[in-house]
Each structure stands twice: as structure tokens, then as C-alpha cells.
Image 1 (cartoon, rainbow, N blue to C red):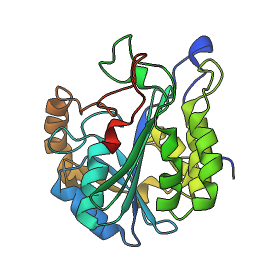
Image 2 (cartoon, helix red, strand yellow):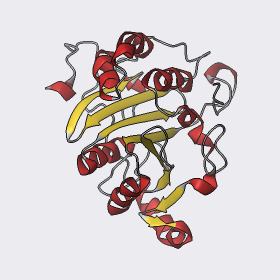
Image 3 (cartoon, helix red, strand yellow):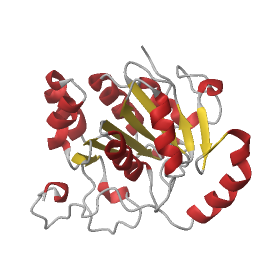
Image 4 (cartoon, one colour):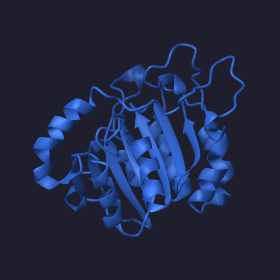
Length: 251
């Protein structure tokens, strides 16, 4: 199946692409996911279960979406621990950076960034190359797709030309290899309808943990405060030209 990828042309020929963040939890019932997200005052959308996975889309995708300066990565860690399940997080920023992370319960399995130099606050010494592709085997095993690990490693390790390829295209390949919902690459279209995805009417809308229209007013106030408190960087200790290359998440 072909999935519509949002955004305009790449850097050299038009608008920059979309930003979005997805928390993908192994669950057959969305109710437990929604309840856990309410508890951390999550802002975003939760989709109905699909092939054993429940997807929550953060709003905003690269900002603070829950208590404690939590972005989608911190939400993923909290949800995995709370539900004792496998959670994968995928975050795309301006279609120029893809970040992946996975947990099994409280255990972090690894983090990946296609370009750590594009992280908020990164200085010019941070390397602009894929970091964490060696986690492909544990990512694949965690979702029951161990046979896809080699191809996944190739996809994650590839240095894409930002003038011709969106990171959403890389993510589409990753989701296909891992058997995860492919419509996530079009999540940047929310709150409008998501091409190939669930209808917006079927999504649970939370604003600061409050469902539906009742959350509009408190959600607006909290969103304003959260914009002044961005989440931590995806890669706490990004690779630099003089680094050893050891992934700090495994130390």
C-alpha cells in the first residue's frame, strides 16, 4: 500500500516537510492506553487498535505533550513502564530528522537519530550522520520481526540526501519492515483527516489529559506554558567528531 507523505518539496525546492511524533504501544485495547495518558495529562490523539498496536500522536510532535516536560519520547518510556509492554516511538522533525526509540516495560532498548545535528540546541560539533543504527536487531526483535533486522539496519544507516528525500520516506520503510501502522507518516495532517489512516471522528482527543471539548480551555492554557518548557534532547550525549562512538543509552 502507498501512503501519502505530507509536506512540501525538500530544502532545495520549496517548503520544509511536516513534524509529528507517534507513540506506538503493543496493546489490544485502547482504553488502558488512554487511561495511562490521561494520568500524565497527555495532549494529542489516540487511535483505535490496529493489528495489536495502539498509536498516540503527540500535539505538538516535537514539543512538550505531557507532565514533567515530557515529549513523545518521555511519554513512550512512561507508557511502556506503566503498561509493562513494548512501545516504539517515532518522531520526525521538519522531515529532516527521524528519531526512533523502543522500550520493553521499564527497559530501554535503544535510541536512533538520523541526524543528531538537527536536535534542538545542538552545536556545530555534533555529527550530521545516522546514530544508533546498531539497535536495528533489538528494534526488530521487540516487535516480532527479527527476520527484518538486517534490512532495517541498512535503512537506518543510510545517509539520505536532504535535497531529494524526506525522512518520512525512511520512516515509511521502517514501519513496513516492523509491521507497524503505516499511516503514521501522514500524521502531520492532523487535526484534518489522515490519508489512509483512521477517521478523526474515531480518534480520542486529549488536551492536557481531558477528553473532548471540555479540554479546550485548560488545554490551551497548558499548551501555552509547555511551549516555554521544551522536552530534553532525543540524544543526551550526541556523537561528535572526537567521540568513541559508544552509545550512551547502553552505558
